[in-house]
Image (cartoon, rainbow, N blue to C red):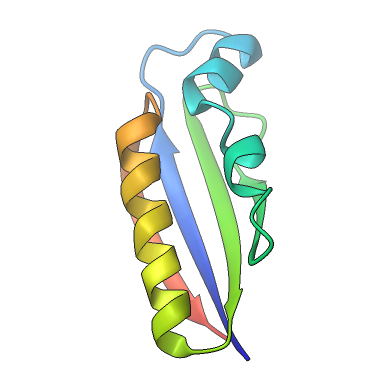
Amino acid sequence: MHIQILTMSFSLPGCRSLKEKRQRMGGIHERYGRQPAVAVCESGDRERLDASEWSFVVVGNSAQEVESLCSEIEERVQRTVDARVMAAVRDRL
């Protein structure tokens, strides 16, 4: 079994409320948390309105499978979230 953690940091310029922050982040938890091989949570910058950090724990039978799923998540999040991706870091466990 292979495990990788993908941590993505976002900037939300001009965000003025927690409600707006939730709307702009576009339901990341609902979208990716339903996949059986992925656990997702807001892991940082919870109190800030202009920033957010999300971590995805991805599990698979092969390193290639995990790497592919992390790449897919990263690409889809960049396309669907109304925020700037400031960093995307992957850590293998």
